[in-house]
Image (cartoon, rainbow, N blue to C red; front, side, top):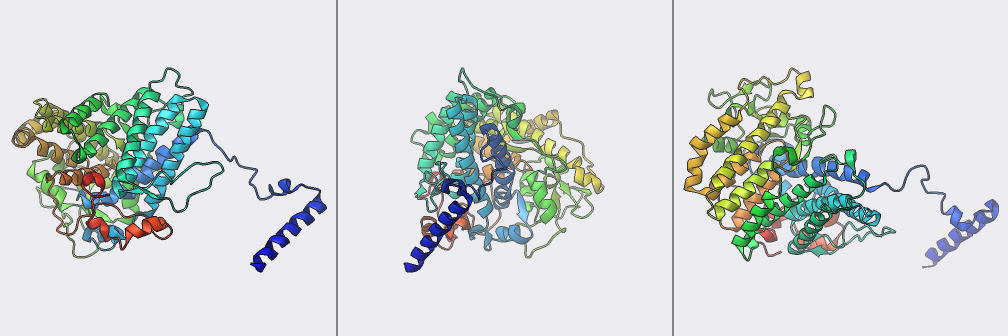
Length: 516
């Protein structure tokens, strides 16, 4: 105690001496260590740019989607961390696995809250509505993957900022209640008669279009209502609402929520990861599903890992990665074309997902129009696949090394419709919901970051006692992602529930039937 008192007296003496020598007041001396050359505040539209970029690159299209792609067998992990995830050694239950993403999603939540607060203070309903949509989006990513999580007391924006370093855990159910409130508020704000200043070029997704942000909000309402179907107290009413939300959402792929600012230097995150790590290979499980449905993508999506020559299963040139590989390897197994899609956009919510949600709701309600909705969804999903294949064929970095050599022409809308009528329509007639879920799963494979949604779908139908997408890995299936090490080591509230991390194999999140 005496030592502390001495230091305080010494510090006070120093301040008094400095004041006497310089003639400065104590308050002026306090400014000495401040950075006066750089701004300490920015307007909401510039914060929005950062939120959108981080959401696309670091969250939706980043590590979270890459790990999810391995768990749902879109791809096979064949080296380093992704191999460990594939064989369920360490990675799925380690607190360090998703730590960067854990921190990034909280940063996005905090920044989104700042946009909402700043916009409300400025009377800008457009920016406020956009901020509410992005806050709802990132909040859902948080709770969908991690379940119960610090939320109300975390990522706060009090001024002066006094961070709560040990925030308590909110239930997933309560976080979802907040997500509903945010989207409902956004829907009102985005239809305001006095929207305020338009963020224009600072909005990388919609360039300030309030009508498109409104459609995005309705699409998210549909997604999150379907997410909680296993918890519904009135399934038919919720399915009817989902159809209504979808009808108020995207009318074409031109309206979907996509981050499409990738280039030769600003890389699609899947390409960026695989080009530098070579950690995933083409999944044999995925190929089995394509073969079962005679999917035309079979002739378009496989390449040799060394020569980058086009490969097909039919001619026996592919070497697809097994679901349970015996050891780590690189540049051995066939690649999927999507890992080369250097400039393919990241999709926060796609047009085809909205159509699949509508088709599922119609199928569950026994509505005849479900088949035509599914057909439109499959066509839109195939068009997105072709967009990524084209991005791979023209990838600036890959072209610089000789490029890919595709030997099959692009799949046209007419070909997709003919294939659907011959091969998918009979499957729909036999089991409508299964046909929807399998085709949605296949359409979510690619460079767009949609493996997270495939992972969410598999868990939610499991909670309903349904098994539509056959996973071939006989190992344990991760039911959620582990909390980040930044909190498992510092927040006793997280540490107490984390344990040794193996809870991810036994404890589903709330909407998937867990007891959270």
